[in-house]
Length: 410
Image 1 (tube, helix red, strand yellow):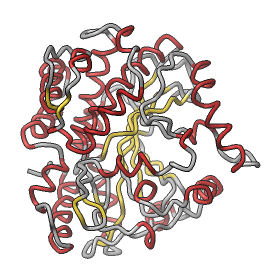
Image 2 (cartoon, one colour):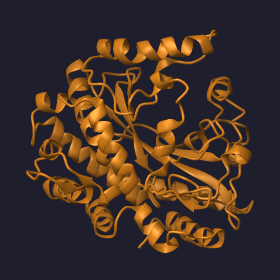
Image 3 (tube, helix red, strand yellow):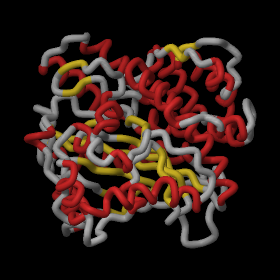
Image 4 (cartoon, one colour):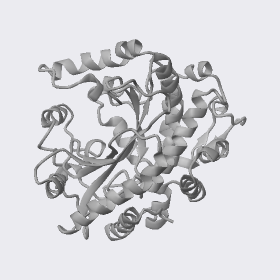
């Protein structure tokens, strides 16, 4: 994450937020992020430098990413920085009748007819992916997420952080799920983005593994157990060596040894930056407690197999906070001494334990989620189980207003 001495555990956080560009009236996706960037810089580019927040694009032409220009020591300070960049982008887009749309999946988007692969920088990588997997699918072109990048300075720190992240991944969607509707229908999943993501690389399963990463503790083990199989799987499709194995790794958390960080990728984006940063603050505080062994030793955390964690994850992406977790052993990893609990009850317990470490804004946003349910839940309260396109459009226009005004959906 730095050219200098690597950052230590929890010294900084890197944050990326993804949004779709859509028509203000119809919500139809608009593959014009290159024109947005051209409006600002005067030329076609994949990155726009804007001080503390940068804009960029990856893979598809209708998604814009806002990210911390440098890893930050102060997550709460980025609430207004991200919100002001959202307003700036929205003002530019408004001139063409467009706007940003939040949530992790567009509810009416047809990936088979509307996907346009980014035709500019890095296109050879995206074209390779498209040849192998056909990127016209919800798991490729209709998934907007938050990426959290957390640093480690050496193998010992990597092992502790990776172990704790593996343990936390299964319950993150209970807080963050925001994608209940695809193709105009309620999917039965609160986190349909992650359900689609689980299957988008079935052709080469080595790239994702079990989504929950393997229990590896050092860079050497990671290269052997994760990057090795990825390289072998990709080789027949990539004779020119276009793809970097670090880029091809699609697990729910990926090690980036090029920048000494682990990137968490299972967080659905919310309706406003304030909610995204609140979740980021809570995840960081929870991981600190896990790394410090507050509830269970690092040794006990390490014993979990990825397939057992994946089983919990798969139930959580379906029912989010209402999921019943029947594993006393898993609940004990977070200090909850019960034989069974819902994911919401587990998060309420974790929040009671670490909430004092959060900013006042973050506490307010997390309390709202715990009281009213994840965003997917609140969306379905508005749309009902069998919504029509007009009602969906109305609800998602309200979500776009939440984004512009940096407020949570009631």
